[in-house]
Length: 165
Ligand code: ADP
Image 1 (cartoon, protein in one colour):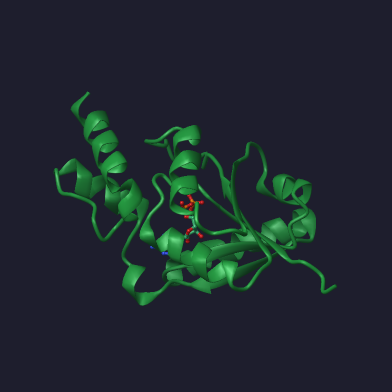
Image 2 (cartoon, helix red, strand yellow):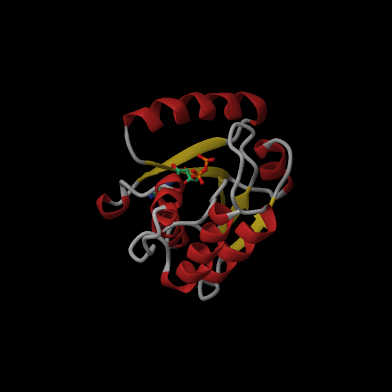
């Protein structure tokens, strides 16, 4: 049997967007297993709790067989090792992101020996970010075309409530 390859796709996914989902869909065709690893970015305060983000990503990937969605705490490389991941996967939208990711990949390789692979973001989703999604909801606009349909209402309502408080 050919060796099974497992990739770990980490992020804060606060909330998940169509861009994130596109990366996962493409990765599922390239690897045997894809682990979406939901973390807390120390430099960002999340709008959705870790549990909510895991739930949202599970909803949008429920029909994809080789994807699991898991929360993690602590260092990504420790979690990746625990999961026996072969690679770390990240999406790259632009050169600024490339610069930042390049540094992160170097650190992760140094810490664990794990390599980071990148997928360039599909042109259709290049401008989408979780931050943009939050801004759109802040001004009361619906999120169709930015987040997957199955979670649009939930994300819109939830962000509306945060803002009203
Ligand atoms: P982090 O806080 O770790 O940067 P994000 O949730 O912002 O996590 O992003 C997770 C991953 O998804 C990153 O690799 C990021 O580059 C990628 N990503 C973000 N937005 C998009 C998008 N619109 N299309 C594809 N990939 C994206």
